Length: 298
Image (tube, rainbow, N blue to C red; front, side, top):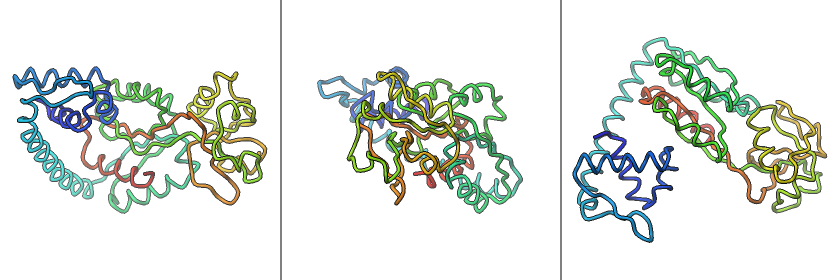
């Protein structure tokens, strides 16, 4: 029996859905079904029965549930204890952590805040940060030897339709840090600024801005594919593109409105997930750094 099987069982017991739990746990529905089947085989119990409303606990499942919760609670307590020991150890030695991140970090204030937070908690850890586009990240991860993977944190912006690609290697564990809709970002003087939302067809009539990042460009192209694709006005890495091109529309993740820039929701939009990918199992001090990233971006 593997601890992940307990986690899988508890999540399905709560959601009553293989698909929903698979999304929660960042694994495929087929992989989740195999995990439960293996758990049932190892325990000799039939844990679930399929109903019109989804997955329901069987009699065996209901009796197994409190034991599973005790096992998971004990495991979480173990993780907390090991994390404290690992953090204390990391604080006493020099370590290098390789942080790979998308352009989103470098065009916002997120990276300086993150580096400051890590330095405060782990003054002896040196972060080697570099920008890597999310489309290349998986190929990069597959090429990493196990030793290098243990001290590497890869952060990717992943649209809904690509999530499965980030879960296909047993060496990795993926943690969703936050989820954001793609919106139309416009200057306050733009005609679309007063709209409550716009359709993809309306967006297709505009000149489009996006970050000079392969994933950002792919998302814009997919969003407007049925209308012949985007009419790009400019693709760049500067954070003030709307100031330079106020007549165009920026396709980007949602962000707060300002006096000079308005975020307009796009109907039937694409959601982008910010995902941290590390070795599985994840060293506890790496887990803590991932939590820092999530705290800044969440």
